[in-house]
Image 1 (cartoon, rainbow, N blue to C red):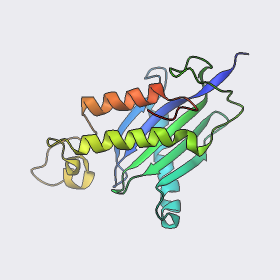
Image 2 (cartoon, rainbow, N blue to C red):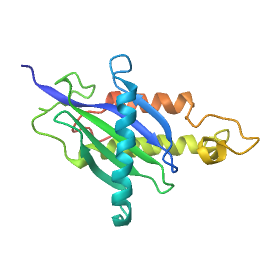
Image 3 (cartoon, rainbow, N blue to C red):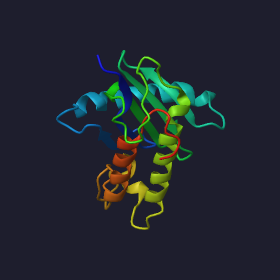
Length: 179
């Protein structure tokens, strides 16, 4: 059996009202079932709620839960209440295929620090989205979407943001320190 390296299976951005803002799958459907990952992302909200009162300054929630022997969810909470969830497939790709050339064995596992560059890059991309004068974060809230006169999807549709999330998900490998 060939050596395999962990890879990102899914990146989910969840709004402050626990509404899904964006989901990227790696590889994209039909290779991965979007509904399965939608359920996984929803289940991560319970862990955020349980741990939130215990958090002080550090917004890194680390390992949220190990779904099974193969999938594990990691989380990050922004100061605005938006949650980033990364689902890692421990048998994601053959070792050496990672774009960085750094690949390890899935048996070794991951440290929480391995995903910090992913969360920093996601937070930078999200801040870039918020800096766009044409992006209104309140338009993506289910609370304000129900207000008369407000039209819009609760999903993030920015092509630049979606492309950046895709780049982050495809370029990460254990040991990468900068995305």
